[in-house]
Image (cartoon, rainbow, N blue to C red; front, side, top):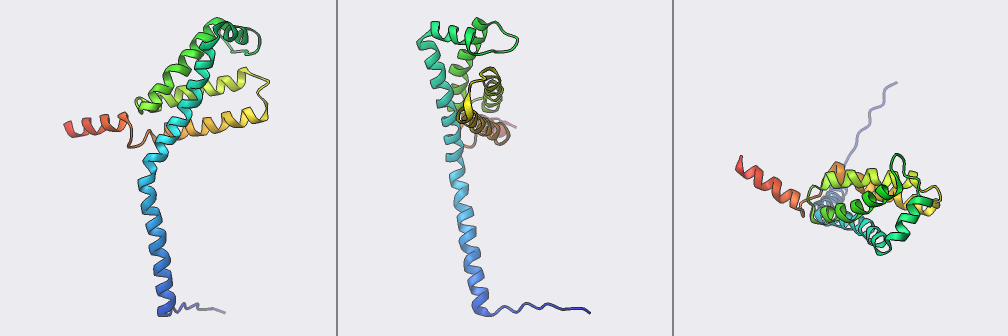
Length: 164
C-alpha cells in the first residue's frame, strides 16, 4: 500500500517559516563579523597562558632548573637544556601568536610543547590535564583554521596576492 504525503503550507505557516529563516540567516551573517574577534581571542588566550609561564620560569631560574631536574622528566634532553628550550619557547612563540605572525608554525610548536609538558609532569592532576587539553584544542584550531583576518599573516597574504 502506498501512502502519499502532501504538505500543504498555508500562507500563515509559510510566512512564519520565512521569518524564522530570515532570523537564522541574519544570525549566521553576524557571526561572520565575530569570527576575526574570536580568532584574536583564541590567539591571545593561548599566548597569555604560555608567556606567563615563561615569565614565571625566568623569575627564578634556579627554581626552574631544580624543577626540571627533580619534577619534570623531559624525554631525551638534559634538564638544563630542557629548561632553556622550554622557557625560550614559552617566551618567544606567544609573541608570534599575539601578532598573528607565522601563527600556524607557532601554534604547532606550542601544541607539541604542550604534549611534552603533559608527558613530562606526571603529577599534573585532573584539572591541569583538562587545561592542557583546552589549550591543545585552541592550538589545533589555529593550526587548521589559521590566525584569522586580524593578523599579520593575513596582511602579508593579501600583499602577496596583490603582487601576483
